[in-house]
Each structure stands twice: as structure tokens, then as C-alpha cells.
Length: 257
Ligand SMILES: [Zn+2]
Image (cartoon, rainbow, N blue to C red):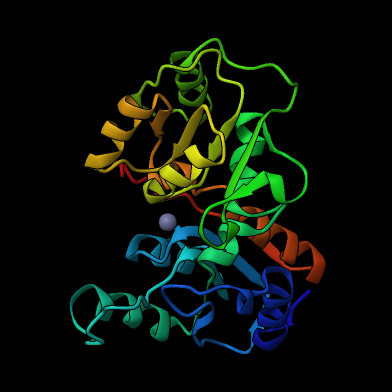
């Protein structure tokens, strides 16, 4: 089965509703390739390694969370940008990228899918969201139990993600209400505290959050930008591929960040 680039863009846009978000870069088709699409490769970031692997896997379209173009870039096609564009244009591969809309999708997005992996569910309705553009999720364990303390939560996350977690413990125990936002969402910590979280899970930590955790008693867990954001892209791409009868493959390019 195959579809067209245009139909594929329409399917992604319909699902992810990018017009609802103020974002740091263009969502949708970032680099135009061939018209006919039979296979999608999904990944976290449109790095050279992912593009090369996708071409090797005979992808007609690549679907990622982190595309090529961001606000604040100077617009020159040099260095890594030239290399990546050379590969995409040389092989006529389409690049689709969705940033915040992919974080936010209530079932298939990065936050929903990370929650699923960790056995966490957001509270129902607006009570289950917090922070700018309502991107953050807040809730608790699907089975209703909590975690004995922040260290128990960190051990659980470490086991699920297969990766070291940086924990700044708070003072609350047990941990009942957990807030999370994937990637570089350390700036959401104060909003998570205001929303009533006992612990906050994200990808990265910056210097101030360690102090906020100690001073306000809410645990902060930095679990990896890549590690927390590798579930949304394959979930969305698999969903759309099934809908349009296309082949799909997720290619994980490991990243220690
Ligand atoms: Zn990210």
C-alpha cells in the first residue's frame, strides 16, 4: 500500500492539530521529498545517523520530534545542516517534524506514552494538565498506589527506562501525586509544584531546580531528554501508518543526554 506526501501530511496534521500550539519551529513537512510514500521511519531527532539509517531502511518519509529548523538559527546551510539536507534531498526523502503537538497528544504523545511506560495516568480532565500551553501531565500510579519515597520512584523509573536517573529528593513521603513533562521541561518544575505534585519527572535538570527541590520539598527527577522522548514518535507514526496501510519502523539512535 502507498499514499501521497500530501495525504500523509494531512493525516499527521489532523491527529496532532499543530495550529493549536505556539512552537519553537515549524511543525509538519520540513523537507519535501518524493510524492509517493510506502514506508515511514520514526525517530526522536533528525540527526545524520537517523537520516542515514532511514535511507538504508528504504524510508520514503521520516517522522521525528526534533526536526531541523528552530527559532534563533541563523539560516545558513553549512556544517551539520548541509550534511543532513544533502542526505535528505539527495535521496528524495520527506522529513516530517512535530515538536510540542507531539508532546501533547492525549493518547499517543510523548507525555501520554511515557506515563504508560511508567504506569502513570493523568487525572481526568483539566486537573490532569499543568504548565504553559497545558503540556505537563499530573496524576498518579494507574493502580492507585504510591511510591514509598522519591528513591523508590527513581528506582522504578531507572528500571523502566534502563538509564541512570538524577534525583534531588524532596521531603514528601509517600509520593502520591506525580507530575511529568518529557524532554527539556525543567522550567515546568515550579508549575508542577503549584499544581500539587510530590515529585516531578522530566528529561533534564538545570542548576536552579536542585535548590527548588530542597527548599520546597518536592522531588525532582532528571531522566534523560532522549530517554523520556522516545515513545511518542513511534506511537504516532505506527498509528498513522496503520491508518493509511503503510510500513513503519522506529529507529532509536541512542543519546546520553
Ligand atoms: Zn525534546
